[in-house]
Image (cartoon, rainbow, N blue to C red; front, side, top):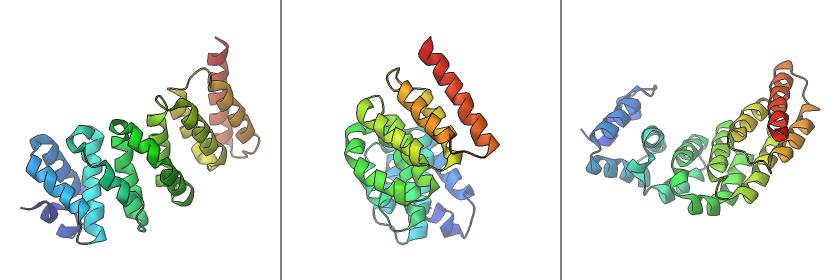
Length: 211
């Protein structure tokens, strides 16, 4: 059975069960011919539903082992710019899994990614932050400013998760900058859970910065 025939949309399924099963088989078998077939579908899909499913399978594979599809960066980057919101955010998700293997290319792609983060949906922004965090170690100064901009401008319910993810790897130099931005955001919050979460993050950051 071909790869296309095993995708959810080909089986008239609305759930991700077939896509998950296919990804698991491809990861277990590591059949280069089948992986190449999947990549060819992403390169030249017969329709948007098939493309979305193929990207979903690619995303599931990359989540477990990004090296299996190490050479798909340019192809995935092309679909990030898709006019289809579903295709765009799924491609963004794949990119967030493999960007660590393509640091320079990802950094060069940032203007496009930032535009998509600002004009796309929640998933594009979430995956974009994951990408920024993956670049932070090698492009600290540039990416720190971008992360601060995201935390400063994102909806209140995203401030907590973005700052917490960054706090895991943040440098001592950038801690005061994050503290300042979180204090700015805190002044605008009115939901108790947002206030509590950001207050706790500020306590952790202040404690770390003074030890």
